[in-house]
Every structure is written in C-alpha cells, then in structure tokens.
Image 1 (cartoon, rainbow, N blue to C red):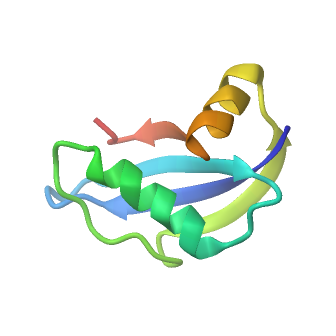
Image 2: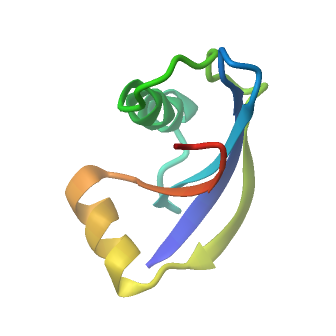
Amino acid sequence: MKVSVWDTHVPRKDGKVMHFDILVPSSLTDTDVIFGYGREYLESKPFQSGKLSSNECRFCHMESAPPDIVNNIETEGYHIIEMENCS
C-alpha cells in the first residue's frame, strides 16, 4: 500500500515540541480528516499540547508501507510514527 506521510510538529504545554508522522492511504487527501487523526492521537497523550493545523502538519512524501503499518491503517484509518517528545 502506498501511504502519504504528514510531518507533524506540535508544541507541548511544557515547552517541548512533539515530532511525529501521520501515515494515511495515499488516496486520502482531505486535510480535515488527516488533522482529525492527529488530534485523536494528541488526545490520547497524558500531557497537554497545542493545536494541530496546517501550520503544524504538512504533507512530506509518499512511500510503500510494511504489512504491520498497512494492517493498522486498515483497522484505524491511520498510523502514527512517534519521533521526538511523544511520551
């Protein structure tokens, strides 16, 4: 499956900046849906963060996803790759 990778940087209330990627099917282009997935992920965190909009989340590139990510996308609609300050 080809996926779109959305590079995301969201400030946390403690001053750190979260860096994570939102992966969605390449056919999904509705930014309201994509940003909604990012907000859903942020709400799952035990700390507060800033808002998520086009200023914090931008399309980066497309790539082929491995089976575990494909399974998660097929189940949840998206997949998050945590990179910095996400826990």
